[in-house]
Length: 265
Ligand SMILES: [Mg+2]
Image (cartoon, rainbow, N blue to C red; front, side):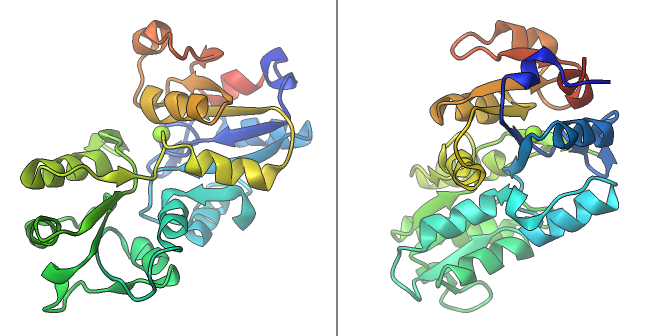
């Protein structure tokens, strides 16, 4: 087993998680060996995900639990990108959050005041939207009222779907679309394909040639292009071979059955 000629051309590898490194709780075929091969060959790695259900330290724990080594500095979630985006806003700005517990923490850490569950919720000046499993009508209603009253929408990406344990699950983009439709306003998205997450990862990795590996043409391939780096598509998630082969602007530098097949030769 050795590094493929393609991977030999790069110093850094940015890896998407859902549909690339794992699907729900299961690593993609031989993902562990693929990461071992990359690290053994001296490639530096960052994990870049639009999924904000977990905090970065929880992703580290999940990776270790699945037998995949990782460190906190290697994890870039869209929650971190949301926090970065909010960090220069007025401290204490009332903010309504649609998202998992991890997103609440990112919003609080950015200095915003979370108004969920208070009678000030419809007066929020910012609405943060991130897909989560407990999403409900109350969130959609309160967020709609806040946006109609002038709140700004910040979205953790626009992914329509992501691979779940029993087929595709609706992603953050489906909730963003519902809010945009209700309010006729446009959200500002900071998730992939916005280059912010990629730049955060590239900043940490330092100079060198970087390759993004992911399963989505819009977020992973499109986002990599926006950040000025190459991308390869793996077929363990959303994109089919036919869709990946049809992608031209930009085109992936490689299409592989899975991460292991891409990495090894
Ligand atoms: Mg993915």
